[in-house]
Image: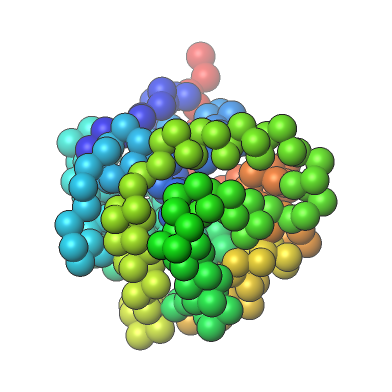
Length: 267
């Protein structure tokens, strides 16, 4: 699996692996790159079945598979210790990594995540799935901003939304791949496993997230042994995209608290 490994800003800089959500594309984290690059070596990637890691996903493909594939790819690149920043599905992959490889994951940041999908989140995903199956990929892509972005932000960024829609239609991951990734996401249930996670966790959520209510992050916070919870007033499901200044400030503060911070050597 191809990874995009950034340059280390100084020898021994901690590694941060960023995992996107259901869309799967590493470009989702564009607004975080410059903020992190001063103190961290960043790793982004297109998840299996998407972008430059195009593939046909097997039946029964799971979050455990996603975590195992990523961990093995990191080892190939010589990365043995890393922090994870994951959005939604990406945060669940982070939970899998923390459970399977606690010695490798130094810290975990979960953005708009959950222990198990709430009834509301399931309703949203079921509605999107019906759109995909009944009306096709273009309908899925057209509806996506409704679930990702606050209305006012979307209204003020129409050219961007049109460009994103064209891009996502041109690089659609395929109906079967999307359904298998969606099945893996909807099957997630960490209500029993959360207590076994010893990795320190930061939870960031947005109070106006339409897809995943912020109370899901509160429930996850209550279930994890070591966690901190930061609730943004606004930003929607894609709060790292719509409110990057606020989000990046929270992210940098959280990583600095959760991970050891080696200093750049001075001469």
